[in-house]
Structure formats: structure tokens, C-alpha cells
Amino acid sequence: MSSAFTKSAARNIFYGGAVFFFLLLLGLTFDTMQTLPKRDNRANLTDSVERGKHIWETRNCIGCHTLLGEGAYFAPELGNVYTRRGPEFIKAWIKAQPTGAPGRRQMPNFNLSEEQLDDLVAFLKYASEINTAKWPPNIEG
Amino acid sequence: MKYQSQAVAKPYFIAAIGLFVGQILFGLIMGLQYVVGDFLFPAIPFNVARMVHTNLLIVWLLFGFMGAAYYLIPEESERELYSPKLALAMFWIFLVAGALTIVGYLFVPYAKLAEMTGNDLLATMGREFLEQPLPTKIGIVIVALAMLFNLSMTVLKGRKTAINLVMLLGLWGLAIFFLFSFYNPANLVKDKFYWWWVVHLWVEGVWELIMGAMLAFVLVKVTGVDREVIEKWLYVIIAMALITGLVGMGHHYYWIGTPEYWQWWGSVFSALEPIPFFMMTLFAFNMVNRRRREHPNKAAVLWALGTGVMAFLGAGVWGFLHTLAPVNYYTHGSQITAAHGHMAFYGAYVMVVLTMISYTMPLLRGREANSPKAQVLEMWAFWLMTVSMVFITLFLTAAGILQIWLQRMGETPLGFMATQDQVALFYWMREYTGLVFFTGLMLYIGSFFVKGDKTQAS
Image (cartoon, rainbow over all chains, first blue to last red; front, side):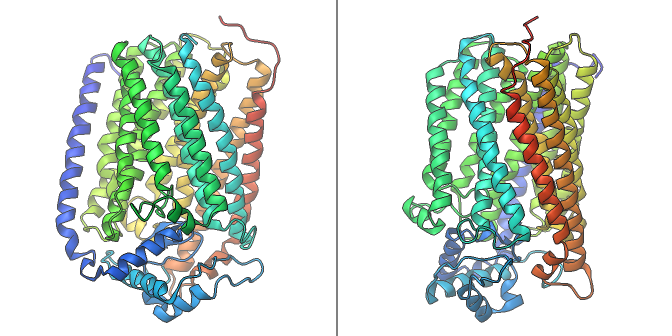
């Protein structure tokens, strides 16, 4: 870099740029928070959904699955599993684990009660109704 | 080593390397589970192995950053560390907390662990990379604050250089943004939105400051190029990192329920995110070409150059590959993400920590550089690990492209597991390459034990 461009000029670009773009990020964040009620399905955020999210977290589902495309890539996307499979299939599937099929990927059994299963399904239903800009591309996730 | 207190860096680096080995072992377990699904089930289910793999990575990189800070801040500030005892105490607290956490993951069912550690008081667990129990998260904050106090006092009373200020700023940012890990609203969209304030603002934000400072420090030392030049580069690089990376966070906000204007903000700004990484490549090569001395530690120079190249490839090129919204629509949450994640973490953060270790460890052990024999082995380790990581990335990329084609693009898309069966060949190739990486890592550790003729301080 040429010597006309000094270290203090570089430093000023750093501090100025960092502050400006952080403020821009804050502004966009503020606007996002204003817009979210129209997209994030909060009207259906019931106590059951909240309990379901807690089960989702404490069983570390994200350690194998993705949810809206984020998580691990070892097992299917679950953001749209409610529409792909329906509530009864989901519950039956969770109860039937592990399959024990030799050489196949295995999911642990979490010994969830009927009520916990309903909560988890409620959470997955709520997640499936978030406006995700038409992601995933198809039902397979 | 100019100051006695810099010696506290040594246990940090040793712990970092030890945990690195653990990380790779669990990576190999997971890699095999991808193709032999029931391997080690139910003893170590995939989710547990993954938690251990990713958490060990984070923890050992943090050990590396802390060790680097305790080494470079006294030297840059031209005085002893404010409190070496505090630094050492924090080392043990962090090591014990980290070890207990990993033991907890491995031997206690996760739901039980959550219950035991107060997750019902403040639910923070069960989110990717932030799986740590509440006491561990609080421990991380305490260790980070004690370190920042220690380092800030050292800098305040000493010489202020661009390198130590940027390092300190990066570490402060790391601690501050980690606080978002305590915010976990029931609203999934908000949960995800602020989760990225830890994850993205770490790896595509403040960690780049830490990385830049570490790289600049080593380049000053091994090239003897005028500090003014190096610090100017450092400022320009980190300016570009934050100018592109802050709003570049938008590339995570395409499909999680956030407004669709993020597709524009995210695409435009994150398309520019390779710039700071490309500048790091230019920076490293330029400084080494303009070197005013021949430093006897050739291995450290190799690591520094490698960091520049691999960070650009992994974070820059592989990031750009899937960052534009119309592309990301298909690649989001596929093996493409995994491919990028592996080479970016290795190329940027693993390699910069190993650069720092390579430069400082001989000094911490009382010599300017290791014997040529030890350095040759270390360079073998460099090439084995680096080349195998390139191939791991290529295989995962191939798997990802096939996965997307079969599962997301055709007229009759396959289901997830049917697709996984189709791409198994690439998972096998990734696993074999992983074994080569592990061999490289063993050689790397071996290089610390090779004696040979001492290179005396010049």
C-alpha cells in the first residue's frame, strides 16, 4: 500500500466503518423486529408450543436434524415435517425409535409421555407455519 | 520470550492441542456414523458426538486465543502481565469446566444434564453450538471477564500498539456477543435471529479481529518488516471484515422467518466478505516477500502463509459459493454448508492458532526455533492436515451438490435418507481422508518431541 495512505487513515476507516455498519445493522434489526409479527406465527405461540420447544431443546434434536435449515445434516429437516408427515406419523415414529436396523442411522428413544409428544408436535406445527419465504424448495426439505 | 509472565501461554497451548485431538477423534466417529449408522449406538449417539466435536473445537480455539493473548499482549505492551496468577487460575477453571462439560455430554442423558444444571431456571441449552449447561456458560463469561481485566490492565499501563488494541477489541467483542447466548425466547424466529449474534458475529466478525492481530504479530516477528506497514494492513483488513461482515449477517436471515429484504442485504454484503480474507493472503505473502530477516522458524512462516491461503479458500471462496440468496435457496442446510464450515474453521481459526503456537512454543521452551529435524516433521504435519482438509471439503461439496440435485431439484425428489444412501461413496472418501488428517495431527504432536540440533538464538 502506498505511503500516502497512512496508518491513521486506515485506523479511522476501521473505527468509522465499524461504527457506521454496526448502526446500520441495529437499524435493520429494529425494522425486522417491527415486521416479525406478520411473519413469525406468534399468534399460535401457545403454552403447549413453548413446552414443545423446551422438549426440542433438552433432547438436543438439533444435534442430528435441521430446523428451518439450521442444525446438523445427519437426519431430515423438521421445519416442515408437520406438513410432510402429519401429527400421528410423527408421534408414532418417535415412539418406535430406535429401529435397530443393522447399519442404519439410529435415533434414540426419549421415553416421552403422550402429553410431551403432543407438545412437541404443537411446536413442529407452529414452526411449519412460519413464513420462510417459500423455503424449503420442496416437501422433502 | 521477553517477559517472564508470557509463560502462562504455555499451558493454554498444550490444552488447546490436547482438546484438538479429542475433537478430531469425535469427528472420525461421526464421519463413520454417516455411513455405518449404528456405529457406537446407543453408547455415543450422533448428536452427542457432534456436540463433543463442535464444542471441543470452540473450547480449544478459545484456549488458543487466550494463550495467544497472554503471550502477545505483554510483549506488545512492553511490560509483564498484570496478574500471571489470575491467568493461571483462569486456565484451570476453564479446563475443569470444559472437561466436566464434555464428561456430562458423554455420560449423562442430555435432558437429565439440563435438569441437573438449572436449565429450567434459564433455558439456554439445546441450540446448535450453544449446548453448554448454564454453569459452563457462566463459567465462560467469568473466565473471559477475568482475562479481559487482566489484559486490559496490562495494555492500559503499557505501550499501546495497533496489534494489542485490535486483539483486545476482538476479545471484548467475543465476550460481549457471547451474552446473547443467554437470550432464548420461545419465539423461534427471534431465538434464531439472536443466536446468530453469537455465532455469526463471532466467526465472521470479532474473531477476524483476533485472527488479524495474531497474524500481524507473527508477521512482525518473523519478517522484520516495519511495524507501520503491518499495522496499516491490519487496520484495512479488519475494517473490511466489519464493513462487509456486520450486515453480511443477512445471509443467515433468508429463510428463518425474517423479512425478505435480508435476501438483498445479505447477498450484497456477504458477497464482499471474501475481500478481507483475500487481503489476508496478500498481506501474508507480501510481508514474507519483503522480509528483512531470515527467521530460523521456517515452520511458523509456512503456517502464516497457509493461514492466508486457506482462510481465503475456506471462508472466502467456499462461503461465496453458497451465499447469494438464489443459490442458498437450494444449498441451505445441505452438505455444502458442512463443506464450507470445515475448511473455513480450519483455514482461518485452526491455522492461525497453530501459526501462533508454532512461533511461540519454541520461545516458551527456551529457543528461537526448533531443530531443522523437528521443523521438517511439523511441515509434514502442515501439508498432511491441510491437503486432507482440502479433500474433505471437496468430497463434502460433491456430496452436497448430489444431495441438492436428488432431493431438491428433480421432478421426483428423493427423500432425505434415500438421498443419503446415494451419496455414501463421498462420505466414505471423506472418512478415509479424515484418517489422513488424524495422521497429520499425530505427526504434529510428534514434532514437539523431536530433539535434533538446537538452533541458537541469533
